[in-house]
Length: 158
Image (tube, rainbow, N blue to C red; front, top):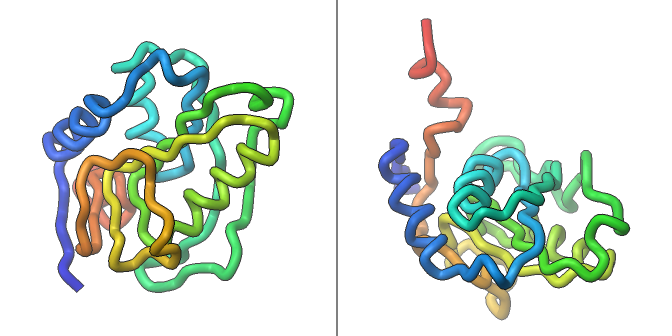
């Protein structure tokens, strides 16, 4: 599999492409999917001046090739925080699509109006060909290594 290693300049560029597609007046809250969506979620919320930022801690992957059958929600905002809210769900990548769709469904079940935005969309790997993120920075079929990925930890210090 083709592997692409991104730096912080790449992230700034991708976030800018994503933000340019979004209208801040369309959203009440940013819901960042941990862990990969936390930095993109922060960049989006800052650029759009959306101060209501929440996290959805979802575990779905164990390494590059090992996906769990179903998402495991470690933490999720209570329904009272989402009901009637226009929720911008932000993640780093739509790979299989399972995580984003599980979060989108949970927001909808809570009475929120979900929209999904990701830095990278991988349609060739999506398990849901009829579905896609509402917004994305780039389309790719590469394995993306983000600056915050654990395999890059040796770059962070001694």
